Image 1: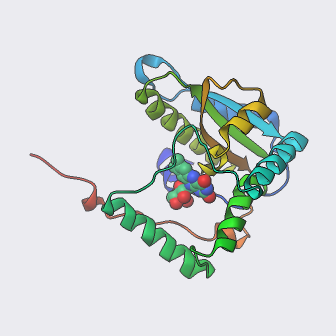
Image 2: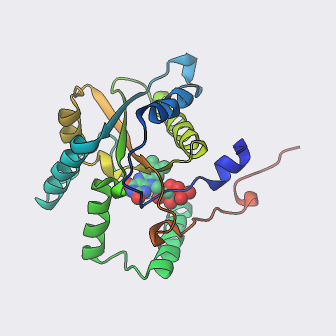
Length: 220
Ligand SMILES: Cc1cc2nc3c(=O)[nH]c(=O)nc-3n(C[C@H](O)[C@H](O)[C@H](O)COP(=O)(O)O)c2cc1C
């Protein structure tokens, strides 16, 4: 698979096969992602891979915290509002997904099910948590984003599926405590990873992108 195909066919996978991925393959994914660029080559990223019984235990803990009604406290605050242009893209996404799956996004029961599915890693056999030192500047957040995309593309090239999940950062202190990561680190993102179940309806929906003319301006 060439780079163009890899970029264009990566999509968020929301149903995985339970079969675990060999450790060497997961390490190869990270070993590829580490070649991402970063500000002055600071490489401000650390990855924790959680699998097996430990992953199930973490899932259980997150679902319990959620069901207790604890307010999310992610290290990177949840957005409270969006500029109108971006907000209309969110609305478009919700519209397309509700048409495809017959979902009412304002239904509290749906929201509960969706969050729980996130905390269960969408059935993936592994979760990857990305951390960086909390004292790092904003540029490092940019860098770890590049790392995350490289990781997801490398996974795709290795025949794996991924989904980046802000929801997995909702209870960052609990995740850090469970994984033995100090509070001085910022939990940036959780990524579920495994073999995609491409037969499942959850993976039958492909998001769209705005027309190129909406994002490019030529000055010549
Ligand atoms: C930073 C970030 C956070 C995200 N958080 C979640 C999440 O918590 N749960 C989820 O199911 N998808 C999450 N997504 C996936 C987006 O919804 C998805 O990338 C977007 O709709 C485009 O679809 P695609 O990834 O299939 O191309 C997140 C994506 C990014 C980049």
